[in-house]
Length: 180
Image (tube, rainbow, N blue to C red; front, side, top):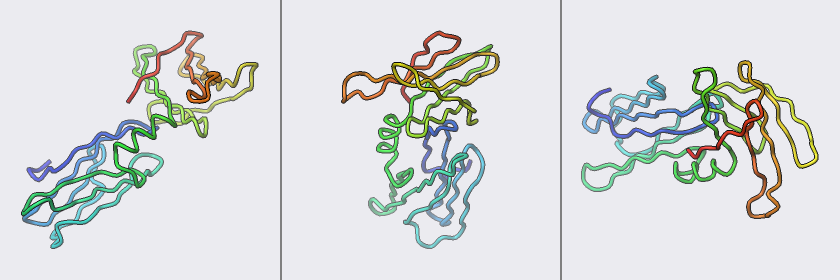
């Protein structure tokens, strides 16, 4: 990284947490975007120092945009948007549509993400094959991680405001959900 580093963001997607770095050379007009250390965009000799740069993040090619705005004189403000929303709005919305669990299985750290709208399950960036079934009190989505039997139980909370409660069970033991 050069001394032109202008912004760094961490973005949690279903396939993992991605680090976005943005370099902005205000004297050279250079713009460089790195995602997880890999260069995804480079522009040299840009005469217009403000504007926006759009690129994709993660396996699902989530749309990201860095906005470059002049604040005063030669000071600039950099904001990141994910799928057209500010990073803050995106993360607040994401917490409503996903559940995430962090656990250690057989010495390996696992980040399990449930996409509530599709019931897709991801573990450490890989989409997991699942089998869903209806049970008396809701649904169960079964999958395996290594030699471990896992299940996401979806049960009504009984309260309209709380909606459906999703619980991860690994070998029959409940795992606490984390907030990202």
